[in-house]
Length: 513
Image 1 (cartoon, one colour):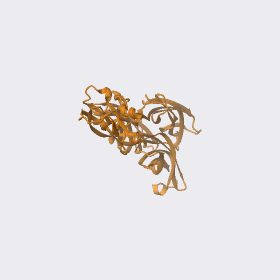
Image 2 (image 1 turned 120 degrees about the vertical axis):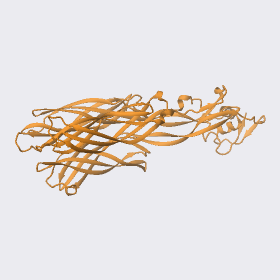
Image 3 (image 1 turned 90 degrees about the horizontal axis):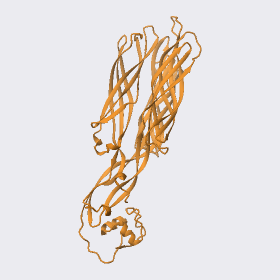
Image 4 (image 1 turned 180 degrees about the horizontal axis):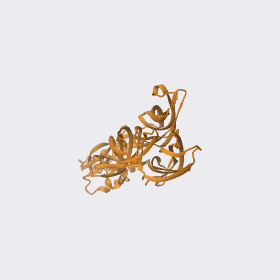
């Protein structure tokens, strides 16, 4: 009972969980040495993790977004260019007043690209409007110890009735950048090798927590579209190459222990490609972020007692949370649609593709959490020298062990293969989830108690109490104005858990000293 010092009432609670749309707009001008835009094929945004600043009742976030632009020029050939812009947004944090800022806060920001609208406004100019959804979850330390008034210098006699609870704790790692390199020679062919475009994603199948760090083992998956130019008027057919560059590193995360569960997410930033004759040199920059969660015990006070006083108590309900599953997992998804349904001719050749995925729904059922989502593939195809883009959506369903009230998810498609055959466009992909689950529980606890003098109770020299069903050692002691310790000593009982329902099990009567 006496372990409930101020620090024991401190738990990590969520102070914000907000999702808001963010609209971005950019006017992009290609350099003069780039070919003019004849037909725009796609504009693909990649958001790098934001930095944040907390202050003035809000959190400010900012970071770069890289647009990959694929188009055809006046000569009918394919060209690509990357344009980096900045994004910024703010979220109010007015609920932070009840939290202890001395312990700092943990913020987790997830960015979900939604829609991209682009329009060519000049030979080398285009306007881009991009909408993304941002989910920000914030955690801080809150002191749930009650305020006690009127103890009159008798703090050593004050007794608290406490419950031991388990509450979750989130740990956010520091964003880590690593650089990787690779060199290869594509299949032999005639003509000068030229890079058209390159995109990348991070595959993280092995993520484990260690002391003050999260260990990440995975691959940078880089897909490139290349072609060989011979100088002839006839265009060379582009071809795709995928390289998987392995890596192993640690993301620093203060407070992490091997007992924690952890998840990690990665984003490919700069992709440097150097082509020399038949050799291709890759230099890739990754940004990795990691989170972990665990549970810790705390003592929460639900009643107080001081001999000679009665307590006027104010209770409140607090929303605590328990840690659920947290980690990375991957699974395969396949689907196809008839070419006629997609408006594609039978002789179309699929050249290059990328995909993204989103979770549309999650629900707890039968001891598991069901996830329903959709994968969207974007495939560059060619027919009789003309290029176009076909889109295919494939629904999927997967499960996480354990029922969860809330799931924080990052969903990506590091590997996607699209092929044309039997009059259908088929997609085979590997989807990766980085998930963190929670369950909520509301508890009532004491927030304030005012101790006022109690009227003296007439007492006999020897008094016997017959406890009623459901009464505890704490209840009887408080009724007679005796500390639970003294009452237990007088009756040969234990006072380790005076508020438990079993504290008076098989006790027919009590001697009141």
